[in-house]
Length: 406
Image (cartoon, rainbow, N blue to C red; front, side, top):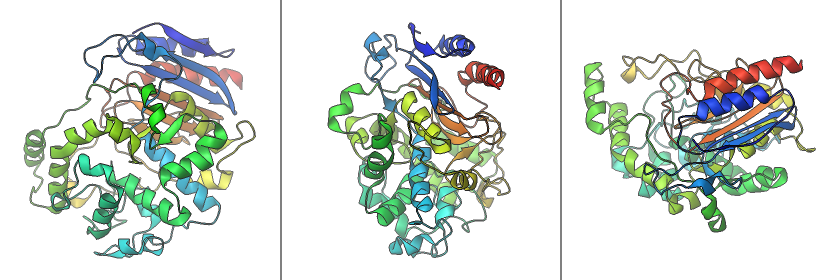
């Protein structure tokens, strides 16, 4: 780890020490920003030291305050915020069938799937079929991805089970946003959120910003198709089911997807589930504006937040085809946002936000007025395990600091 940079407000010195401790063994870029009641109280970062494990050799210049990185699934929380803005304005009914806004989607038994089903990973479309031909390179083609999903039959009865739509979430929710607003997710984000709030945050990175991107490296839980096939078989999963086949196809294409997300071409297009690009400051500022005013701007009102963070999945099982797979840290979703759970406690019950592959994290906690953004480039965290060890020191210190302010 290189030198710690940044500032903290009165009473948050413990967070500085805890963040430094959490990043001590991390050779990558790390950023932590915290807002309390609409004001920044923590703004810290460590720069990447030279490492041969990065896609491109990182240097101390990465400690510059302009550094941004791919946010992976933190992008889902950003995309969800766009959808909730439209719902708040009365332009989007979350309980309406998706086909009301996207008629082609109603094919293949999907006529009753609601926008809320898409937001809460209940739609039965967690990945692409082999027949679709959608792999890493094809994810650069918005029309190809949305047309494949519109034609696809759900892999379980929608609304009866939940499984993480790790990449498809972005095209599903994003196409609804596009149909309703007439703008892509990236354009809507720029016009309605990033621009007014002054965020360094994009879905679809402008070419002139590419030089700021610090590459991600590492891999938390490498799973080859062979290992996945063997593991599923050992658990008694029927590999001939359509859902198992989608999982196996996803394992075959995961390396190409990762390469795309780490490339300039993958930064420039819109993959709203995974390729948001920004920094911890922008994540924290966005979430702060969902629960209160930030420089006179508030994104979501209290009623919208209450609905968005109401649990949608806690009573839902995994799809029957995967019932035998143990899940010690089950995912927990509201409408588009990840809620507090054992594997990602955020700031405890009432928190809402989203984690991202490898350890990124953004969330808000309305009761305390807290909003947090954490960005890293060394991908070590596996979301199926417990909390990222890098989060634990500063999360504990935040509890101490916030309690002392009340």
